[in-house]
Length: 115
Image 1 (cartoon, rainbow, N blue to C red):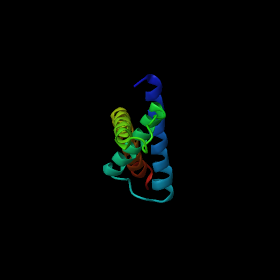
Image 2: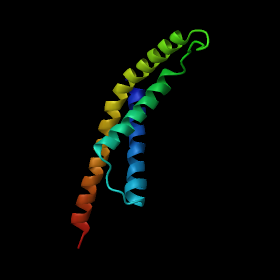
Image 3: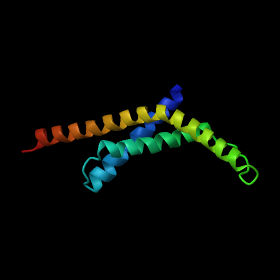
Image 4: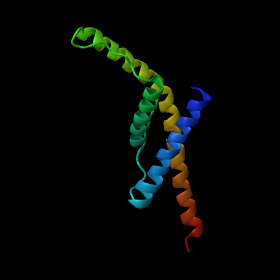
């Protein structure tokens, strides 16, 4: 990953954590999501970022040769998911660290400021 991609992935993870903190936990009062939920969010975010960096893919016409179309589609998907794995681990680490800091901050806040 280039430094620009690291910065963008970090910012993207920060935005996701803030949305979860403010909207889901703060406004709706829902409990902290499980690690499985964060894994799904990280997979979707990493795949989206990898696709955006890969750019559009030229696929052959499926009416002319459906096997060539399927082969090109599988190769493009493999390339996107291979590069998404790098983003996945980075984003998942940032998501879990951000939410864990939220939980610790709430615990400290309740203990210190509670009468």
